Image (cartoon, rainbow, N blue to C red):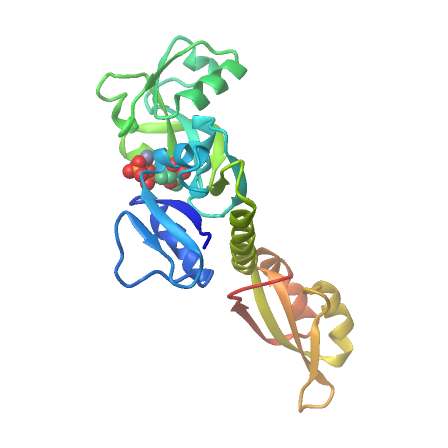
Length: 285
Ligand code: ATP
Ligand code: ZN
């Protein structure tokens, strides 16, 4: 029988959420969990656990069919793989940072400077585009300490909250790119394997859709139904159920979380009461 092979990061910032998304897709792993390889019990999926840096190479040469990896790593390695889904976690940015006592007046600061990074290709391309000549020094870990030990004048490193930079006396000055976890695929999948991948992507999309959207229920006077349904388009059109109290109805719909905060005041002004916003587990259009 055909199986789809996926590579996930063995341990690190991507691991837990990568497994989490598979679990939300209803994919079950055996109770005994090997640290290297695993086979799902209810879906034709084999999982290989690797260092994240190795994943693009394994996907490119077909040892696995797909992988979950930071977009930053895909851009750095320039391997022949396709990014097939953005997954909305492990969000971060690659930024240039300088010691906080440095007089930073603009990108020209980096001219003739030494910049330490684990992403030499991305950083060199960025500097070239900005017509800055600098020396890019590749180091594989703890980039943020490079300036304090005299190894470099500045760094280009991944940032999420910025607290690591701050702790090391560095100030973020330029954003090079934004990144999130993505699913990558080998460029030539067997048709049978591509079919399994489609089934997996269908489930992943349902999980991703549900993350942005909330189920909303509210009570409203019948006279306000028209204005409220215009505010709440829902998936097709809202469900409207009469309440036992005559003249009132219950309205059910779907809203994007950020839109909810924008329309809450208008809903209240229109007379909506008892507003409930509930998470959705899966959502298929
Ligand atoms: P491995 O041992 O697998 O090589 P690693 O140390 O290279 O692990 P992690 O630190 O686990 O990798 O980061 C994996 C990915 O998580 C990064 O490539 C990036 O896409 C993402 N990420 C999100 N936020 C951050 C952050 N603040 N710092 C570093 N990486 C981040
Ligand atoms: Zn790594």
